[in-house]
Image 1 (cartoon, one colour):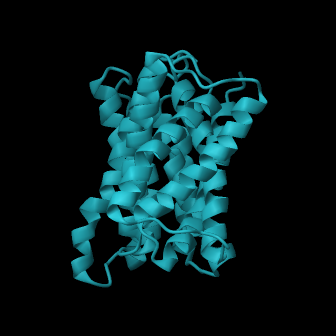
Image 2 (cartoon, helix red, strand yellow):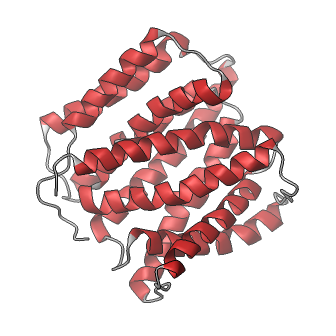
Length: 296
């Protein structure tokens, strides 16, 4: 396989995922509660991934390894991080949220080291550090919080990256239980939907999104993109390693800035463009392993 294939997939995934960030901000702007938003997001994901799975003549595996995958990914990669995202994004500035997103690779690297999945490598460590420096270049000019009380929500916002890092490491270590990425995420979305429904009803987070307004259309578009990109991300983590896949968080940050300029009319200083170059340098340094520890 071409050496640049994995970086190209990572770049495309990050750009697409960056597009979902301003859409998610629009969707959350109406005051809808977290598990209501997650529920309808999962409905769209199940429909999109179900059509792709069944349209290719494939079913939904139900053997023990597959069921374990569904539950772990549903909890670590959807329910917990999405809930904390919607709760914290309503209270913290978008720039701070971008910094926190970049914590994913920083957390994934020591996890992979502890499990013996990665070897200590100064070049790759430097790549991660360079990526973090890039994110800081975006945030430093406006890093201080408008209200000191907002600092109370920073630990909550960091729960998402922690769980994403655990999910990345799980997928890279165990693979996808013999499934392809679309099947795997279809199953995980179905399980997450089943788990989310009762929680939404008990907490009173439900809402009816029809007829859809601007926020609801943003939620539907973001969810459809999320379904396709998440499947791609899981495939990348299984093939190229959790640390490399986590570098998409840097691309997401840059792409989110650009898409915010296009969709929301936001404007940024030259620090942002310098940060983009620094992050690309970090992505170059953290390349896929020559030999993969986890089979496809």
